[in-house]
Structure formats: structure tokens, C-alpha cells
Length: 280
Image 1 (cartoon, rainbow, N blue to C red):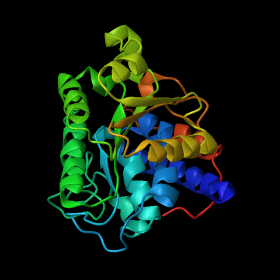
Image 2: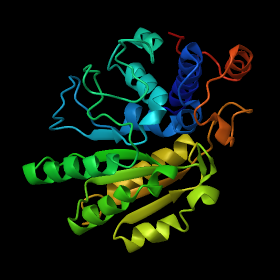
Image 3: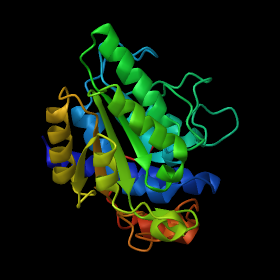
């Protein structure tokens, strides 16, 4: 695994996130910046995907973004990994764009298989896709990403029960645990308690990654989770990240959940991130 190259990709993806949200003065930079290492490691190394995108996704790994508001990191990684032209990132959240504020399917954007905006639904979809793969003999994996605040939605816990009950052991669900949501700290709004213990009690295998913004640590967790697949239980990765990672004045500040940088803030942020692959 070429960590130096992936670090460069992470820098560029973060630049994309900041420039996309700044250009339209809207969007969700905080969580996007915090999930960059996971998304880059997944799409540039781990995801076994076909060169031609199909909605069915048979014969390849699948990914579902449940916390759809972090679409900036999703779009940047999709473009930078070849799903559509990087130049299209300039259309983010604009009228008639395929890059809507939350991912949608009706415009046919390659890489997007479900519309995600209403939180709490992605795990249910991932369960269905993973179960379909098992029933059809497709031995590929299904990955999903969820926010920690999103787990306050009850539907997630029905899906956790469903996955364990049906032994959906080709499913790897990652939880972005930055302890931040739009109204403040997750533990203050509606705490999750010992999340790993809860997942174990629900019949899952659960890994905790303390350095969720470290490429090596993220890579190792994905390798371990892949090794646990096929053992009769679904697997969760609890990824402890920092909201706003990479930009010092955004880090660990819930106010950047859904606020775009102004001109001065953009300049300060970009000064901290080298332009490694070329801006769109």
C-alpha cells in the first residue's frame, strides 16, 4: 500500500471539500474532512469494484453512504477514483447538477446506488444488498458508513438486529465516531454509551480504531474486518475521528458540521493543505 500517494490523495480530497462547499456557501465540510482517510483507503485500495458502474453491482464490492450529508467527500473520492470527471465537482449543489447536496440516483451519477439524506436508513439497505449477495452466491463484501449521531435513529438498531439474526457476515459497517453532531456533542444530545458493548450484545463483531484519521490504522482495521467476514456475524468498525480534520480552526468544532468557509477561512484552510493532484 502506497501510503505516501494516499496521503497526497487525502490532501487533495480535503481541498476539494473546502472549495466545493465554499463555492456555493452550503454543504457539510466538518464530517467530510473527518472521514477522508477512511474513504480514500476504501476506494483507492480496498474496494474490489468493476471498471464499469452498474446499479446491480453483482460481482463486486458495494459501498453505501448512510450519512449522506457528507456528500462532498463522497463526490471527491468518486471523481478522483475515476467514476466521473473531476471537473464536474465544480457543479456541486448547483441547479440541475448530478452532485446534489445529498446523493441521489435519479440523475444517474456513477458510484451512487441509493439516495441518502434521511439519516438512519443506510444500514437497512446495506443489509438487503449483503443478503442478496449471499443468496446469489456472490462472495463480495458490502461496506457502509454511518455517523455516530445518526445512530440515535431507531431504524439502525432494527437493522443491527436483522443483520445478526440472519448471519449477514459479508457486511462491514463503519461508524464515524467524532462525538459531534449539528447541535453539539453526541454525548450531550443523546449519548450512545459503550457502543462496542452494545454492538457485541446485538450479535456483531466490533472493532475500535482510536486513530481514525491515520491511514495505517484505517487500513489495518479494514484488513482485520475483511478477515472476520464469513464467520457468521456482521462486523462493525468504530472509527474515532476528528470533525474538520486537517484544518486547525475546524477540528473538533461541531459548528462546522454544516457551515461553509468564507473567503478568508478558505484561504487559511487551503494554506494548510498542499495541492497534490491539481484542483478542479
